[in-house]
Image (cartoon, rainbow, N blue to C red; front, side, top):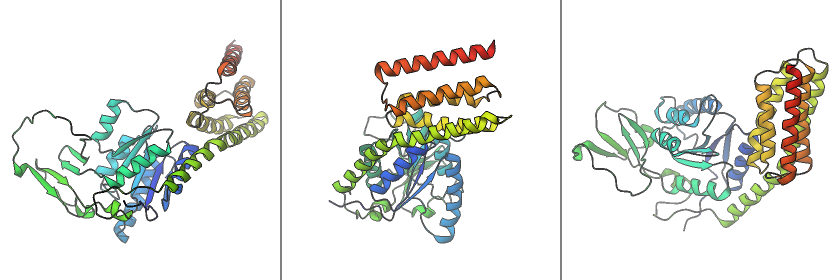
Length: 356
């Protein structure tokens, strides 16, 4: 059985959650990936891929071997990203494997993403077992690609299930199998009704040292163990990282106190609150996410330059400090419920006083 070697691989990781993005970066590094590119939004990733597209044309290289991409984003979501990779002339590789990740997937979303050519799906927060499984699937068992006037992407049939009878009669002239090199496979297509199936050689498996045999190439136990340890370390270090965010919030508040116009300060607070909202649940601290999201909502609409606005931000910072200093993970039990109740009461009191 061959051992997988990803030293020559380049992987692009796209995640708006800073901590989760770097956790995946470190997990891939532990699994032996040679080069890891990162972007904090799908829009930034798209611009990066455009630049890499020019590089691949001039240098004749595959610039990214697969990408792991955030499904839900405010500006450009994962489905739009997949559609661009598959159909845009500026895409560096229209056969690029794209793994979409999200905290939850509903059947409708999965069907839509597959309809535009998504390769695999990955739940957040990412686990080592799930990440390893998706990588091995991409490397060892690439799906054939299908092209017709209505669709281009991996074969969407994920299992051997009965399918409805075709509503039109097919013969061999309706389907063509293409084994062209991927770089030239999409150069010219007539606008006809022919279904084209691409079954190119598995270059990713060869690149990973898996050879041409039918057996799967696997990670060594040592690589998986190293990744597990990295995941444990990331979770242990999260509290320290989150407290750094809280320290930044406190410094911004100190600056805002004497400033006549606090809008820029509230905007910076909004950005930090967004990260705390994204990260807490990922690392086992849902109360951090709850408080961070609450602060993000208040600062997102633009707070007035008033004492009540300062007080509103401070009660959120105080709650975050209590959660992190006392290491309150999960729902926090009775302590967690009391903390949430106290925060809600404080918010209600401040907003009522400001309105009255």
